[in-house]
Image (cartoon, rainbow over the protein chains, first blue to last red):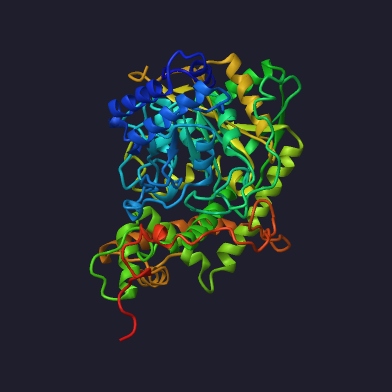
Length: 483
Length: 95
């Protein structure tokens, strides 16, 4: 059962090949068997089996929504009423949200089963899942390596077949990079496409939730459930949600693929470049044409991102003060001590680094030099992407400059970790949709191809990814020991 | 651009963020390295460019002023570290 896609499971459940309770038990058993991956922060057995029983009744009655009875893991950044929501932090180790995130509510409305909450970098700040209070997640392709981050638990769980699919969030690459490193399909939608309500905020002008699945068709099914206007999120976009599966089978004849030359500079690892280039050659066989484009400001995206994201994070994380929820230090001497020690003891090193960086960038005397300057260059980066996308239907390139690296290999140097976001963060700064699609292996470790589209062109991205998956089988590879 | 231990203490104070004394040097070094990364921003002339705060350049949406939520104080306070009579308790501020 665990090697089936969501589309297949939905069919099997309706043909009564197995029940949702049987399916859910099967996945809960796998989660139990593979605890060594550390993919889950909490497992919600009883909750999930209760939902599965209700799903079986709904299926028997007929007319149940497509996701009815199918287990979907939630990144532990989404608030779930009655189930711990930690955001990978000691600060929220004791936190049970009084309400559900809109994404969680939408999955409930669609009948999905929620088997548990997936591990992640603390407050989604990290590219390796090593900043989690609950420890590093292991990559099923090589358990000595990281799964990427911040949605590392989601990526590892989907790759290891512990869940058929999961949610992730992407502020600077946190869906696409772990999808690339774990060999799964991940989609970061256009900013504002999926509600941020109840999704614990890191950098509000960049954060976006999306699906992490085994193939593009499943990503389309999940996005269908997640997307849409939400009055509870003031940045949610009021735009109709198309049928994301409607264009999957369209031909790619005449598709114009923009190749940003900055994505293929001499810094790119030759083995990764070879995988990406052979994927692009596959598209040429499908009738696509290549156009060279340029994003001249791309190399500025790292400094810009590491000003804007920490600035927004320092403001967002000021709510964690030990008063209304979350961690509180013992025996505070006075109010200042309560704030300072609760935050000092509740946050880990990377989160502190970013709060300090953001506070500095926003402080009097430095605001213009850092924050304002970064916002101006953000517009230039955004304009560069728009121009490139006016010359092509989609852009393609690598997701990450490396394959999965060793656990502990980069933890000593925050800058080195930041530099690994070079190909993904520009997309967040511009607010564009982007995908990672399995495209091959280097040293038995997966490599993803990044596909970037115009605003609200998710259907196009999914079509482009799906057609690739009709002629390749990289997305069907299973890590050894998880068959 | 390099930050001193005193700079770090000052920023940590602004952020009400407790930092262990022995870690201050490491934070000063890391933050200085991050700020070095930022210096490349100065290479670009951004004189006429409008700052971009938000990818969609949206204005704040307004909604009708209608009652939507009911009072759920006890439910919301169930996750608080310390409450009494519906109030959040913190150390005494005024003697």
